[in-house]
Length: 271
Image 1 (cartoon, rainbow, N blue to C red):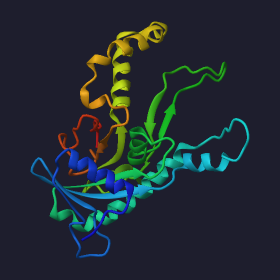
Image 2: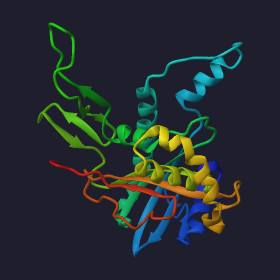
Image 3: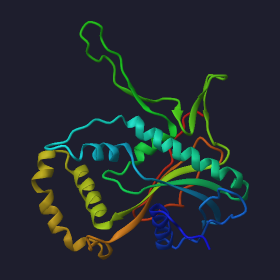
Image 4: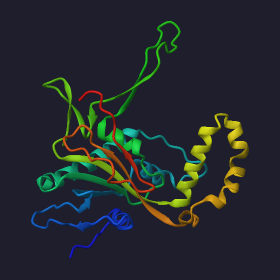
């Protein structure tokens, strides 16, 4: 019987069990490289390939400067992380492709072995759909911006690339890949506290007023914290997911909808 071998696989198993989502580990053993999980959710069969990233550019920079005395500083190009995520998505998609006719959806789940700072859902979005580029017009005389900045995406995402023949952006892995997600374990109390502060900030537009008494409000709110979150060391599984809206089979809502999950289905204005 196959045994899970990575931290990311174990985190996903813990998440699925906590959500009571039926799954099979390595369901297809008749070929070489086989997908890791087959889960059943909302009457849908979903094939999952898990990829664990051992070290990100941020970790490498931390390790390279650890021996230096005093305050350590370094700079990072976010494209290094985007390209790393793209390579893992590409590898996983290749393993999913031969099996996609057997299921309703095929997805990639990424995880990280040891992180000082976990990559965010925004990092994953740019890896999937293209590097962010901010454009604005500048006055030749004064050098000042004369238009509002606009955010655009390059045609270099793993799921969205430029086709020189047609001159248009085309979807990659669009016929079978339904989306990509991140799995992690989070402290429930810490997530609850961040959400509480976010709600408080929306009510208090003035930053000084917020910082003057947010701690007082948090202390007064202790009795309202749900019992499940009160243990500061209790961990909960979380999946943050982005549906491949450029593909033919985007993952629908309602699959990853736990209390800490995040699901994004980007709006497509024109395919």
